[in-house]
Length: 257
Ligand SMILES: Nc1ncnc2c1ncn2[C@@H]1O[C@H](COP(=O)(O)OP(=O)(O)O)[C@@H](O)[C@H]1O
Ligand SMILES: [Mg+2]
Image (cartoon, rainbow, N blue to C red; front, side, top):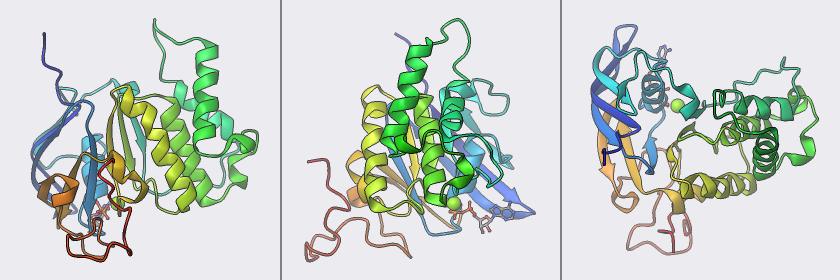
């Protein structure tokens, strides 16, 4: 049996922007079915790493591979879902919530195009999961920033991607809806999708996270179990230290049990 190539692998990846090194010497791989959090202080290079993975930022040195193929020249984008940091749905979008979410199904073309019923069900489920079922017909322009972020998440979920990358999906989303989004990952995880989540803190996502990658000043400084990850400056402790009082940050990491 062939070994499944890792959905994401970087080798000695470096990215300079305007002559400044933003990412340096990053080598890592994310295996099929893994749920990985990328952590790090603001400006540490998390979003740039995601863009480099998605071939939206050029590698100055080293390389990126997606599903075993060089990211440069990769064409099979239907396998990958991406929710960028901050809602990029502008105020000017006239489409309805449902139309935007439905666009997440468009890439699923070809001989195995799912039936309309399957499409409709995936769209309805995704809307339900992010708590926007009652807004399906509303123009996106009437939504708040947090709601628009949830529309983008629903669009990505509707596409049922093999690899889903979300850059701070919890930013600007209230805790109840963060929980709903985290819960929604259940289906993707159980069907074997690979998830890469840039997170400020693990929050409701903690039970899903199998491994953390921590960036500092453009370097990968830690890769390993969430329990062992260093505390990122400027965030809450994303896990309670052994000796801590169990009250304050309880529930940030639950270890899945
Ligand atoms: N397009 C850009 N032009 C100039 N500087 C950038 C650009 N994108 C990112 N940077 C810089 O790269 C560094 C890392 O940014 P970013 O990847 O957004 O970090 P993070 O997502 O961890 O907050 C920051 O210092 C940021 O100012
Ligand atoms: Mg960022």
